[in-house]
Image (cartoon, rainbow, N blue to C red; front, top):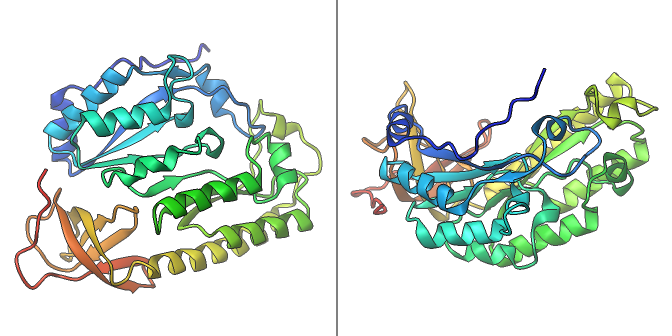
Length: 323
């Protein structure tokens, strides 16, 4: 069966944006490119998506502006290989974000997953503009260089750590989230311990944890020395426990600080849910008409069972950030 290729020049109409907003979604996902030129040994997506194809900057700017006019407050830049944006049209992700900050007025821009090896040394200067949210998802996959080589990843642990240090030196409390694969073929106990030590040293606000599962057609599916399922389960539990500990430590740093929170929805018990610029979930128990509003509020505490920050309900009229 022939692979389906999507027309990246197709953009949603204004009516589409209005429908998105009416469903209570105040965050628009803007796909800026498709395809990937790299071949990580475990990944089938790159084989299915084909060569990299980047959308013209003008089209992306127009789409973000349409969403903003329809009431959307945050645009998230996405793609199969976002960091590869511009590889086929003489541009770059840095140039794209610079143009979006210059030529749109949407209050919040956010980056989705970006491969760490794609970011130039000066990239994090972009975050000095407060409209670019201080959060990035940088997939690590393993904290051991020998496992990364078997995965055909293009970033070593030392390079990854320097990148995270650079982000946090430019923007205090910059939130880095990541992906980790547990039980990649041949992963020894010593390699696993290296991953645990590295992850703990770097620290992450959140981790997506996956147990390795072979995908037909990938190099990893044919690798020898698979890790036993019971070992994968034990390692996954160990990593989840570490992830929860790191997440709590990261959230604790925000208690007592004031942020502009994008409030999204209220549940049946009257509790509102929103997100800080760092993409930490926040709750508050009162308020009317907050949906889609950006409100400056103080984080008063952390509810540890739910892993949510709690916002202090202001004693006077809330200050809504103009959009």
